[in-house]
Image (cartoon, rainbow, N blue to C red; front, side, top):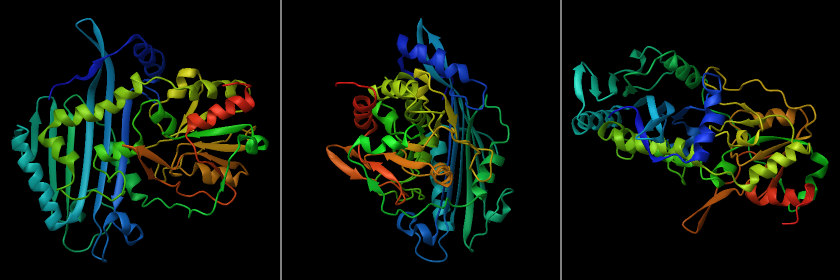
Length: 408
């Protein structure tokens, strides 16, 4: 595989402006929008047995997936294209011996299939990519291991990076976060469903926590699609993918890297080429009218709201053990409006409640696929919370009529 790796479509003038005037301006900052990265950890325990496959005390499979892709805009034959410039993908599997060996065999078979060339023990090259496979017959032999596993478990580390990728302390950050353990969530407890936007008047102005709902409406993939692409868990059942037979990402990462990076890069391409919906323009007007205050609190990569001049506080972090960054809510806010965000992964809603803010969710609690609606209830609303069970676009059209005087 060769780098730069071009995304399929050439960019139109609007997308070029988005790149130059929004994303590129963040390069080199702590919120670099030209870089896409994510980290997932899946560990079998009795607590998550329904989705992890845990059945007995000896079940403690663990999978960690991290990636960091860096993009740029380049010119080819007079046309502007987005391109993947460098990449780093790290996967750590700790499984029962028979399951681990199945993964290792799949990787070794795909070294041949993917035409990787051996450069030294367990290290391979494929064009501008480098592959390392490290097998530990005991998890304790891995330098950064922090956990203990039952007898009969082994670890396989898979590292794919571009030859121009500059390593810093990625693995140290990955394992510090993994060491923090499983995320603890509140039990869902009988929230109030709202029918009319007038019900929230007394809780304005609000500050907004932005999930992927509005981005999805604008054409950007939601989180569950990334889970499917990277073989984290099944999109509808949420069951963990921690077996070689179903792990299509690891399979193709080595067996057909061009195919993998074509699919993963499409996510970033959609961010740059997406078109804003009415939601963002209404949001801008609500912001200007003082109905919405403070920066947007978000874990999202896309930053679509930046295009209409609304600042953000980016809360996805890879350098804190507790993954709970400090934040100050705007002192004028009476509520936190949570839009299209299923789970309180950074403790934002919890901390807002502690500060006396009303929590107002906007979420259809599911999505449509091929004319079938899949239920996906919000994870942990509390009795004092309010929910608009509609899409962001639907609710904000109602806001526009009520608070901005729109007639249509």
